[in-house]
Image: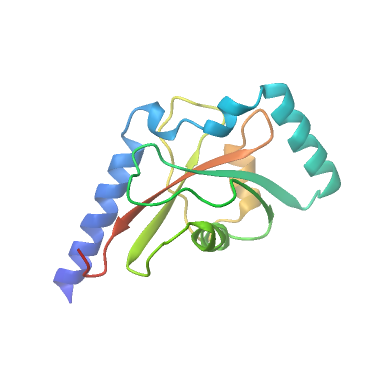
Length: 154
């Protein structure tokens, strides 16, 4: 049992190291490239005014991720008291052809410090905490996801 736990820990460490230590292009948002800052700010402001108890989140596949498909929807509107685990559950439902043996890791991009590495949040953190700490100047929280095959599969 200890060998399984240590193997799982090694897989998680490898994935975390690959995303967090990678160049910033690994976590670069295609959503930010597609829309101007003013347009993104307008959208987030409208959403926050209409749904003040929800957090606007953009989720995209990490540039280094080649085993998982793109998420079906990039924009999520999640309740502020929902946990990161709930967001991860929603993202997992929206990744096409995700197998049960594939682990999914969600990383938060620091909005105040775009050169900082992505952060692996605690699953029990609320989205309002994440928003307060990591929101971008345009009003969105940006996340990237990456996967790893584990649980004894090759």
